[in-house]
Length: 389
Ligand SMILES: Nc1nc2c(ncn2[C@@H]2O[C@H](COP(=O)(O)OP(=O)(O)OP(=O)(O)O)[C@@H](O)[C@H]2O)c(=O)[nH]1
Image (tube, rainbow, N blue to C red; front, side):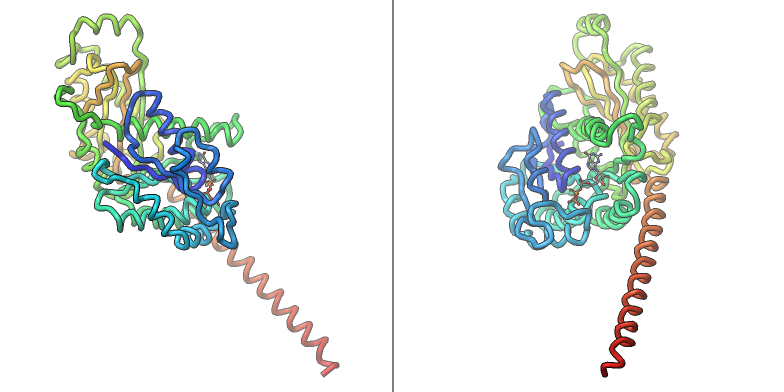
């Protein structure tokens, strides 16, 4: 697939930057256009791979942002993006849409910029282009408290209704207890970039001499066409030198594959599904699923892919499971990536919604106390004023 990618806010930008890094390291060419949009000038200076002229600062003249972020306020994030919508539109003018199959907007849903400006950007993209717009969103961890959960609950609803599919990443599920938050984020961003790029870059090669069973971009788009929230599973297995040497003599694709290759592939796909998913979910709640097998084509075994596909059909309880290869001649590992599209049984999303309701109730209670205190102050003032009158 060929993508135009837009990172909104700090997390969205960092994830996009890691996607570009993974692409460069593995010789992929998924992101034909990359754009970062943020309200914080300092964060916009940090990416290593997003070109400097593709970074847009919004809200620098906004009273509440002034180029320093929006401090976790979703409404300010949305307002800033609305106010600077012309600037955002101008940045999209450079996107040669005939070059891309779809657009992808990445954002953290717990802050103010990603969750507030993200949906405004998506609205604009949907107005400007006929191509599908996908969301890639990070759910805040429970440890972050009520405010990010409230932001996420609000913006998740906007994202899911506005995008053609929302691929979720759950910070809670991926947080390692022995790391600082920043160290943890670096690793999580790499893990997420590996999954999303391996999945979406499949089918980017147009050459006619690629393997017969090669994944096609339209299969990926068809799987994402369900709308809703999706999750990705991934597993990889290093190819040792010995095996690589033997396979050199097989001359091209391993069409039937031997039994051990087939078993290995099925095992890899099972591991991908049973591994930590980007969003933990009940696999059988998926509407559609897709398997991409990525690596040197001589390691592909048609029988293995087919039996993995049949296994996933049963596991996901759907007949809509597509599978295809992503030949990468120089890859040093064999990777399986599984897309579970429109999953509905997602405990973390339920928790975020509960956490958001609690946070909302707390805010309301605090406001009521404050109103009562103000009313009392006014009454006291009136009492004191009485004698003067
Ligand atoms: N996975 C991951 N999550 C992150 C990262 N940075 C931040 N987050 C998450 O994203 C949420 C939003 O944080 P930011 O992206 O910094 O916020 P923002 O959208 O720029 O908004 P403001 O800071 O309010 O202007 C946080 O609550 C975290 O849950 C990151 O590098 N990786």
